Length: 538
Picture 1 (tube, rainbow, N blue to C red):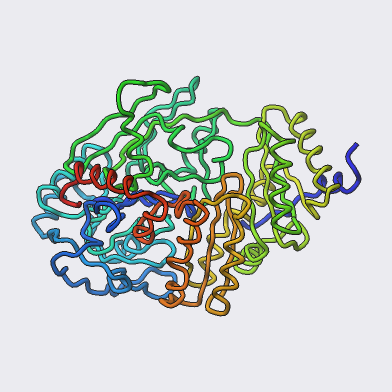
Picture 2: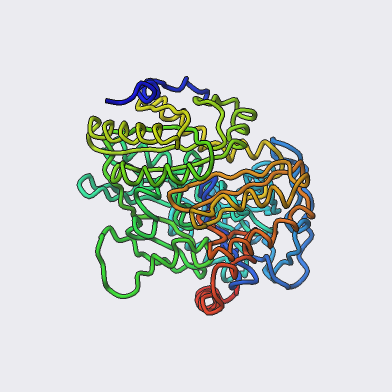
């Protein structure tokens, strides 16, 4: 029999909440990354004009139109020490050629371009004067073939939700939007195989497959805006990684357009194909440095029949770790997510987004999701876990939800942390893979190191995957604060044999940190591969 305190926890339900080439499709998570181009000095440059010594660029004049939210963002080329590569500048003749390829979908309006030139975090800004909106892979191929012949730099863009500055131009690259490439091509109701264009929004795909008894194998906080092409290009992890693994395992095939306009059709729907090199794997996580993903074939698992979410308070990070160990032992195959956040994160979502905490104040919080096929079976296992966690003092308070509205309200506390951080000031974001035992040590270390230089230092993430989202805020961008953070954060991570990018990618901001996670031989091989496929941008 469940003790009275655990039964009370199960009864509690949260109140309803208001709720260059190739820069890649910014189709990633606000917390996952963007299909993006660069990795400048560390590996060969993409087909865009940034990040390397070259001819002096045309002057980018400041646009008179500024995105609606907040003051104008400083140009990337003014804030960072980058120089434009010797690419051509789009001319009137080029615009006329694009108009012939995609009639009525060549955008030069400064107000539209203002939004597409700035990342959603409002930390980097390019000055592109041309936005192209193809609908098909053939149109993408024609555009890239023309740009290749004219030596024009291209910046593919999807949902523009990335975290590392990889979704927008650095200089005046032509923006290639995948927003109109949003069609489902096919869905197989027996195998659960979905084939769709790269510009499909993740949340809309989720709704499509769920209506057919399946789920997408990834879920991100930015699902309402991010594109599946950018998710794949950045190998986005997200909230379901613990259960379904990475996109390297769930993506079955890709259609990709290379820099010279060649269409590489590897859009297989087969789960097994052992004929030579598995070329699609080169593009998953390549961030657009090798080609533009135009279509995706992905394996969707069956929709769970029973879903529970527990939101719990823990007295310390040691208890967060022990709770995870207990989870794995008692919940086993139905455990689908294990997320953690610190007290600072809870303050942010309450203060900036006016969300309500369903539990008493705690130093740490964990969100646990179970997904299974039998509600009674899952409830019994969850009850056993809660009883043990309460009895042993690992958990001090908590609530459980099974109703869809309440599930979403609990998930909002975790998913909207990044949004709350963006309202707290300028954000320095780090997406790290670390051993779980030392996952939070860096947060504590940085608070002591930075002192009053930082407004806030917070830690949250996917503990089940060993993924820490370390965020530091200040009132405005500060070069001295950035110098205090980098390369210190990367060196600390390398000392733990971790990765400087767990799921967000490298983009523009982390391009020079790759050597902290990859040996010289691996970097040389990446350079050789890049040079062989996109020699003009290498």
